Length: 233
Image (tube, rainbow, N blue to C red; front, side):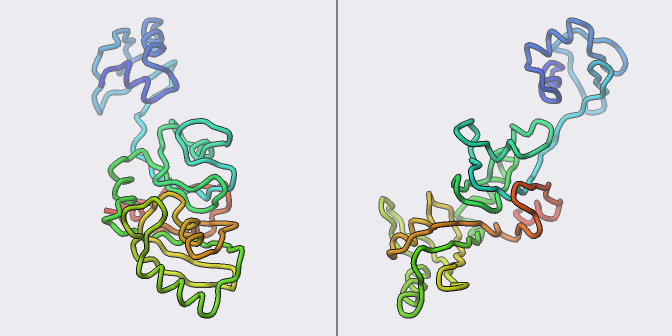
């Protein structure tokens, strides 16, 4: 890797600012000042900037308990981004693995490993995602039985060309539903309940595959363990 790129990868410097730091003699490679931006950096080389050792940031895998009024977006908008809550070096490189609406709380995964993100979100993997939905109208009796059957069979949503994959509906109370999905379509939970004449007034994602929030409070995050990452291989 070129030295200017290495500096941009390991600091807040841009490539152009990295070159200026090199020209000022602020960077050393294995103890010697180096000013050439094209100098190659090997795995065993020691790079320092203003006397501070630098190291490349590896791939990161993060679990976040997303609060409301936080966006799962790479662009800055009206609300803080999920990535803004993560206190890691170069956190802006993390991407959300799928999305939750701004008014939805719960488990969000973030990573800078694109292949891992694809494995988690690919419909072929049938990765279970469990949601808890608060409904405007009670769902019980024969209406509940019909809803369970319809969700299990799958059905066409407005504007879709393929029916939904089978989903599992369990009512925790008359107004509190637990829905397990194996795909992630746009506003899917809200649209499915709207299709049976109900309305979701609050939505929370409890788990993705084997990963659950556990004791993680709203706004809190943690890095995944190696075993948790490997669970999606």
